[in-house]
Every structure is written in structure tokens, then in C-alpha cells.
Image (cartoon, rainbow, N blue to C red; front, side):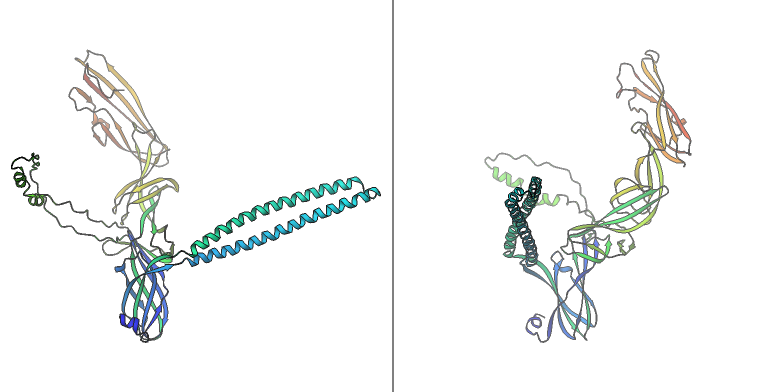
Amino acid sequence: MGKNLYTDHREIALTDLKTKVSKVTVLLDGALVTRTGKKKLEAGSRSIWIRGVTIDASRDSFRVTGKGPAIITNYDVVRQTRVVTGEEDVSELREKMRDLQRKLQRLDDAIQINEDRLNGVKSVLADFSETFGRTFAGGEVGVERLTEMDEASILMIKQIKEELAGLSKERKDLVDQIEVLRHEIADKSGTRLTEETFDVQVSLDVEKTSDIILNVDYQCSSASWSPQYDINLEGKSAEVRRIALVSNHTHEDWNKVDMVVSSAQARPVEAVEGRPLILREFVPMPAKRAMAGGGMRAMAKEEAPPAAKLAAAPPPPPAPEMMIEEAEVEEVEGGIARYEPPSLVTIESGQKKPVDLISEDLKSKTLHYWYPDGMVDVVAENEVTNGDSVLMAGKAKIYAHGEYIGETAIPFTSPREKRTLGTRIAHDVKAEKKLVDKTIHKAGLTKGKLKREYTYRLTIENLSKDQIEIEVVDRMPHSNEPELEVNMDINKLGVHKQELGVITWNLGIPSKEKHTIEYGYEVEWKRGRAVYPPLP
């Protein structure tokens, strides 16, 4: 192929094909990029060059496909280093220099006009002063005429001088800008930078003169996307809007491209074989002895079996298996999800941009929660049941009936798994815990023991227009010491669960109704001992 390319120009025509990025599939840790170009080619053997592909592309990932009456006989990827003189930048600077010089010329003209005006006013004033004496002596004008002339001329001269001062300052600033620009042009004119790119050479056998379309596919690791969510809680439903925050750092602009967002990963996934985990008795290394007499020989014997020790050491733990997180619009083999935005997407290199994916409604249920010893207010939160697709881990902005609540992080959520979101104060539910009674028994009445009895009342009032479900959690003292007893008839309270003194009620309270819970307990301990923390 080399001989045909470079020595037989009569047989193979060299052609440059201009391409643009037409499609990008963004992965979690990379991107698959497609460049497309179209050109009319005559029949015969052709060598097509596609130039300027980003150096961030993986060289072994290039693939070439096409459409049209032609056969791709071969293709090659060539790394190129080009010298960039910055001529385009210099041209822009020179154009800017010409604009500044034109502005400077206009300023010089304005300054000259005002200087001519100033000289004219001074000349008129001098002529008036010369003739005023004669006309005043002849009684033709009064002295007030001289006063008016003086005031008008002084005002006019002042205005012209102020305008000249402003123009002179503006001219000085402009001259400084031109000087800085002149040095910048001189520096850039002598600068020679290098730019590395990939060029793709494609050998074609064109059957007949026609339009040929070539596609070059390659993979870049310098792009990625992360999931984000906007979740609006609406009582019995939750609208989940999925968003992909796409990052492009490929050194190529994506201008109006067809984009696919995929949950696939570019990194390889490895299946790690199981290895036996052998347990042995740990035998510490003997302490080193000072060498004396046959010390060298003794050390040699002790250190003889290092290979055996290495062999007996347990193998290093295997690397964790790589997981592919799923999120779907369309599922392909292996559970990979693909999102295809309906419109073309533009993301410049070095930029991040949110891309809307889909919106779906999930089942939601509003729950309430109150822990009197740690919370002043009752809180409301929504238990959202995921649908048939997974929710990948990401940040989420939470809204309730369109009102912003806050931001949270959603962990990876499997299909039909439940998550609690949108914790907020429930202003339409009032709750109060009150100590109703406390009895302290006097010493001696309980056979050398002290005893206290407490009675509490919990009141929850539902002021909303719908029935609510609320979890109420309270606590009472708990002791594992035999000489410190806590007694309570838990069976009479209808609790959902009780563990180590933490009591939970699951209640349903109708609209506009109040629910009351009253419970008590007694604490008994040996006199002379202190209880910690102190009892109320």
C-alpha cells in the first residue's frame, strides 16, 4: 500500500475529505464519536485523508464505514505533529490594530476641530476688544454689551477646553492600547506552537462516479456523564425527571450532534476466579541476635526459607468486581440503557451541559414522623416506590407541589425499591409531649429502695384535610443492671415495636381529629446509688 500511495500518483488520487462530528454516544467514563464527510469521487482507486481528529482518541479504537458504490480496501491511522504559527490569532490582532488606528485618526480630527474652534473664539474676542473701545466712545454700544461678550466667550472657552481634555485623555489611553497590541503582535508573529492530531488514510476502490459518505468512529476517554434528578412530590405520585450532566473534554466541539447517553462503561469488566483462603497459626519472627562466633552461619540458617514464607502468605484480595449501573429508556443486551434526546445537542470542548432525558411518574405515599425527645415539629416525607427501571446514584433536587425543598443524594435504587425523600416540616400536624404526673416515693417505704413513677401524654392533632399516617417514636429509660429496675406494662399501649426502651407507634389519624397516647413507667433502684443520666 505504501508503494502505491507515494510512488504511483497516476494510479491512486489523493483527496482530503472534510468531516464534522455528527454523532456522540456518551458513556459513564468515555464517549464513542462519529465523524462524517461526503464528497463526489470519480471512478478508480482513491486515497482519502481525514485530518485533524483529536489526539485524545484511542488509536486502536478507529473504525471506518461508508455508503456508496465503493469498496474500502484498507485504512490507517497516522499520528501527526503540525506547527501552528498562530496566524489566525495574529490576523485578528492586526484587524483590531486597524480598528484602533482608525479610531485614533477620528480622535485626532476631533481634537484638531476643537483646537480650531478655540483659536476662532480667541480671535473673535480679540477683534471685539479692539473695536469695542471705538464704538463705546461713540456711544454706539453700552458697557453691558462687553459684559455679555466676556461671559459668553469665557463659557465657550471653558467648554472647549473641557472637551479637549477629555479627548486628550481618551487619545492617551488609545495610544497605550495600540502599543500593547503592537508588542503582542510582535510576540505572536515569532511564536511557533505544535499541535498533535490523528489523520486517517482510507483506501477506496470507487466503482463509478458518485457521492461517497465516509464515517470514522473512535473512542475518547475524556468525556463522561453523571445522572441528576428533579423530583416533584405530588401526594400519591412523584414526577421524576432524569437529567444527564454531560462533560466534554475531548478538545473537539460537538456542534448540533445526534447524542446518545448510555449507562455502559468503557473500562473492561473482569470475572475474578475464586482462590482458597488458608488460615495458619501466626508465628512471630524471632528477635535478631548479635553476631558472635558462628553468628553468620546461624543467621543463614534462620533466613534460609524466605521462599517458603512467601508461598505460605495469603494471596492479595481480588479487585472488586466492576458493576454496570442501569437506567433505561431502551434496554439492550446486558441491561445497558440508552437515552436518545429528541433534538440535536451542542457542547463545546471544556464545557458541561445538562441534557434532558425522560420524565416518569412513580407511586408515592406521604408519611409523617415524630420523635418527641429530639424534634419540636412533626416532619412529613414521601415514600417513593421505584418503577421497573433502576435509578442510578446521583444528586436530586426535591420539590413538593412545585415548591423547592432542598437537595439530596439518591443511592443506587433497584426496580420497585422504596426510598424516602423530601423531609420537611408538617405545618398542618401539631404534636405535644407532656409530663402529666411524677411521684417520688419516700425512703424506707420500699425496703431500702428508692422509686419514682412517671406518666406522660402524647397528643397528635391532624389539621389537614386528609387522613395521615404517622410514625411516633418515644423512649423510656432502660437498664441492664439487676439493682436498677424499670417497669412498664407495654402490652396495654398497642405499640408496633419496642426495643431497649424505644417505643414505636404506627398510627392513622383522620382529618381534623386528635389522637392521644398516655403511658407511664416506674424506676426503682437501691438507696445510696446514683442514677445516670439523672431522671427528670
